[in-house]
Length: 449
Ligand code: KIV
Ligand code: ZN
Image 1 (cartoon, rainbow, N blue to C red):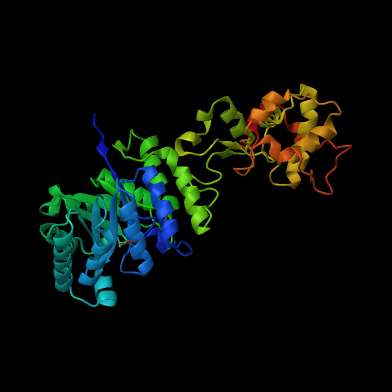
Image 2 (image 1 turned 30 degrees about the vertical axis):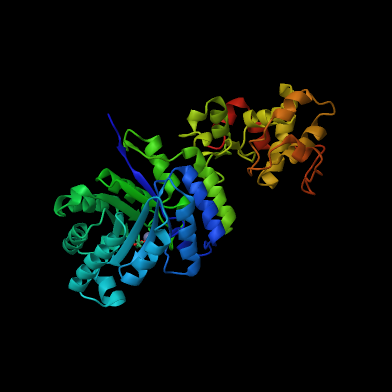
């Protein structure tokens, strides 16, 4: 069966940039845009040209540099914005003017101070103007999910008539719920005349943590474009996360049988680049691209993943561009992970020797959060006068994938490092505590459940 193609509209450089601390200069935007091109997004919203000269220049530079994706620029529903957007976009291979106007009564009354009738006319006239400049015009009724559905459909019908080619439905304040949003998209498809000829898009914010769920619900209802950002950055709690939407569809095609043009192995590099540019780190437990997304600390998990990654990984780290899964050596780790780590460091042990190292390891792990390679090396030295070193040729090839942080990876990184165990760590005469005694291979499996 042919699967529907979902167009990915990336707004990291526009809505994402509105996130506190995430503003970027022209050069940085261009760098990120090139990576978004490698990710394979269909549309890059490069900025809001009237907002500043910097934004104008960035849109213009991206429009000139990238010839594959559509380049969009945002404009309020008024001629100065639309004309400025077009000036910035006109050099693009595939330009798109994105016009927005709020439609909810709250926004009309308190923010815009216009009537519904004025709103409808302004939306129609501005789309008409945009269409006279550019064939590809997107319209967004801001705060759509808190707009009277009847009025929303009237506005949408008017802008379709005026030439809009994409109707984007924003959940501007992250208020809707999946079932409700799904029904809204269905009702727009039923009620708006001319809708068959246009693409419906979803644009969700994450104020209730539902942006991705709502986006998927909209796609299930017939939306064929989804607006999202790398790392989910954006106003307040952020926008729907691009990497989460794409991987949800890829991991569960049984429930979400859709294709995108995204090269998923470019997701982690894109996330890293964005963090590097903005200086805003990703939360460690962020789905798909967080530092811990493929890290396993509990013994039961490490044991399972070492036997077969399918036990605890629903996608491979490589599929999203993460170099390898990481087994973090901490107090919940088991013998299996420890012995593998020792092997990667170049040591093989008899069962009794490993028991001794493990006992010391558990005591140390109780005192420090993550046991790093240099700690382990000291333990090994303290425990065994005579080491069972694997020939160096093997060792030098080993990439240390289990270090807690990505990047501390090669054997040469630690061989000369001073070894720093906590001052009070007992390096001789280790008492046998109950936890250390408790661990045997069988219990590696139970530990950390
Ligand atoms: O959240 C929103 O409503 C927007 C529009 C400009 C599309 O970002
Ligand atoms: Zn938004």
